[in-house]
Length: 172
Image (cartoon, rainbow, N blue to C red; front, top):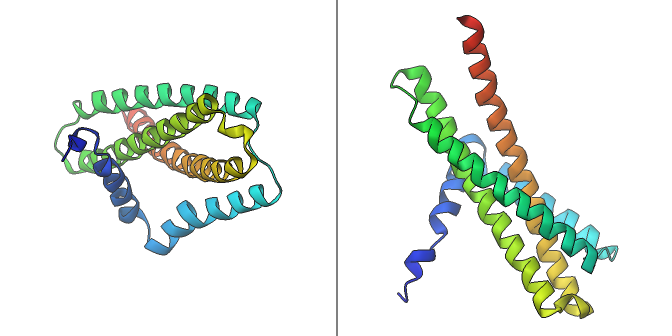
């Protein structure tokens, strides 16, 4: 249908949420990934903490860096995949690595969406219209908070993988 299969990102989103359901219950996922960002976004908007031209530029820089770093993490994960064998202990690490890959790809997607939004704001100068700025600030705050929570989850999974590797090295 109009070549949308080429840019269909649903598989990335589905894989990410599949990893969440593996580790947590639906109500916890809704609380962490939807309600907390929504409440914080509401508080920021309610206190008229809207994006300024300077903060938009800083966010573009930060998310450009995050995008590059996440791409590197994805390539490292891809490289590590090829180095695993087939025993049971390694299968658990493989699953964790697959989850880490899905979550990192999702974080990369969110980071890219945030960047596209920010660049659109600068190009169209939407940030100069207060009514639109409230809406766009709300969307961006929510996405940024969602990204940060996803990034913390990625850190946790990276920490588990690295800690287990360190333990293995200590046993030799």
